[in-house]
Image 1 (cartoon, rainbow, N blue to C red):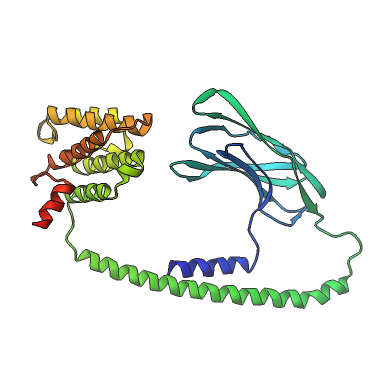
Image 2 (cartoon, rainbow, N blue to C red):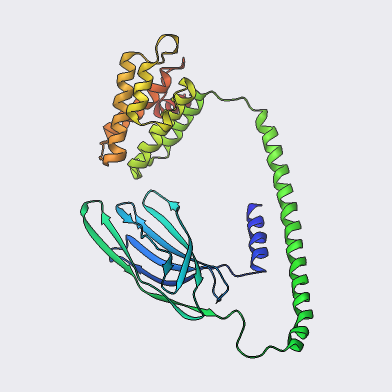
Length: 332
């Protein structure tokens, strides 16, 4: 259903314009960890147009980038606006876009200066490397063509233009109607699913956390991506503790969270001294893997997982949980 909506919206937009960016120039480092290119928003630029020129920088997480600083002009263009955004972020690569709104100074072949990109590798932070994006050119046409313009020619073209506009209007209107009908059908389906889900019993934070831990272990992510495994493992424990103690664990550093847990006294105290000590060991061990990129042994991985399960179970009344034990229990 969502695919149909996306297709119709794309069709409606393409009725009026082709918004595919035009790559003007590009360059990549020898090892492929840094790629830079200029993208132009309009394929046919006129003197009266405001055009968006995007500096797209894609780089590995092991690289530190110095984003170029632009002035009020870039080659033969005036710069009226600048925005800098991270548009994509994964575990291994990041994409950054610096968008410049440009106004051409005159018609003809206009230059865009070359741009140096300075960067450093994480293993050599004192060594500054440079990747230079080559100079490029943009053809800018005059708003009014040279020569005399006949009023008869303009009047003769007007009916055709009006008919084209009316045709596009009805095509767009039809597309909007179809999208609205599809959206209505999707909303009805969502409402029915929500009504069905309301009839299901609400699970407690303990059940949710234990289920998430079991799913994480059975995904065997600890065998393929140990850093991602520890990130998700600590996230499950922190979210669970936030729901059961009121401490905003996901928004705090490990030290801040442990200090706040330790300040809870009396009826609000969740863990005793021994449990708090185990919690500290668990979180600090996970931080060592996530941030220092340590390589834990199979025993250390199993120990950290068991510690997470035990921390959840110690604040509930259920028996000790472990995926292997539960699987053996199911065979009985």
